[in-house]
Amino acid sequence: MRVGIGYDVHKLVEGRKLILGGVHIEYDKGLLGHSDADVLIHAIMDSMLGALALGDIGKHFPDNDVKYKGISSMKLLRKVNELIHDRGYRVNNIDSIIVAQEPKIAPYIEEMRSNISSILNIPVDDISIKATTTERLGFEGRKEGISAHSICTLCKK
Image 1 (tube, helix red, strand yellow):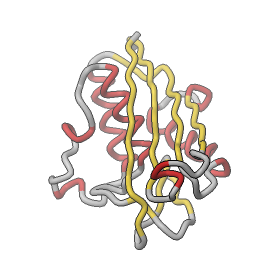
Image 2 (spheres, one colour):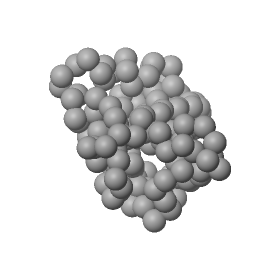
Image 3 (tube, helix red, strand yellow):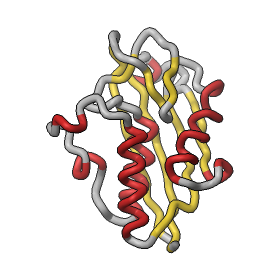
Image 4 (cartoon, helix red, strand yellow):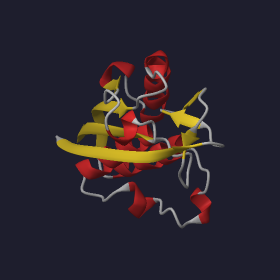
């Protein structure tokens, strides 16, 4: 078994859609980034890559490469999953947390889990997504950005 952790953060800005876990969330701001800036999926991908010491998403999908401009992070997740499978592993489970003062994330968690489950081809029950605030402390608490943390275990196929 292999274990990896991931972390990502993006700034909230006007004029962008808010995408988390492949779900469009109605909100007056979205996350700034080269891709769709889905911090949850980015943290999950980094935890998967880290479990096999394959670097981070910036190594595999650099933000100065135009082919990744505006790309859905779900497409990138599919590519990371292929890398894992090519090395003889599969995702065993994922535990993640989204840190945001707003918007409320709970109503979207089941759809996020379902999206990730379908891409990784693992049961929904092997994917945990939680959400928390920072009680108005820090950049998340000031609604300047959103962060996500993830841990992933991989096992041999």
